[in-house]
Image 1: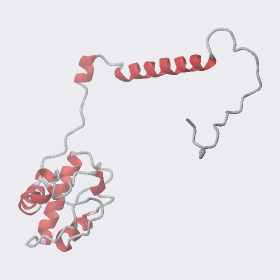
Image 2 (image 1 turned 180 degrees about the vertical axis):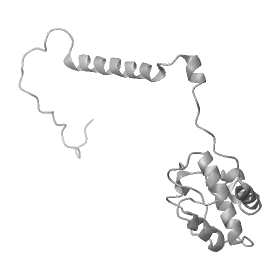
Image 3 (image 1 turned 90 degrees about the horizontal axis):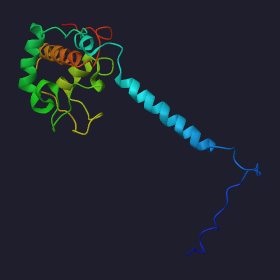
Image 4 (image 1 turned 90 degrees about the vertical axis):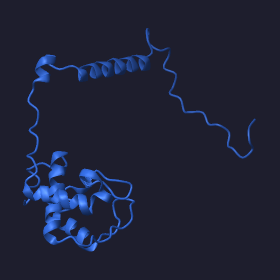
Length: 170
């Protein structure tokens, strides 16, 4: 059934009749087959390695970041007391506050001063949907520096930044 509101269907313009298709497979089918074969070869190559399995298992792994220094250990204690209820254990986030182990908190985007302002003055919601962060009473500037040291250590451990991008001051 056709509607009187709809225009009649248009036919696509056709190329002049060039005669019957060439012998053998249709060119579109050949191109499709070539694409599929190339894709399969690429997928197969992704799983391959030039090293035997034993050599891959013993290949050197990236060095783990250093253990927490004294300032970061103090920061962990302060963080667990004042911040973890919203930002979670090891800054992993909760339903009350975001994780701090995220590229959004990379030192080049949220520098140490941003952490100071957030703790001491609060901050309006701007990246996450957790509402505004209120100031955290009872935390000194020295303790904020310790928290920053701890959070930056966690970020480094999770490859949020590299030592070439940022060197913590603690």
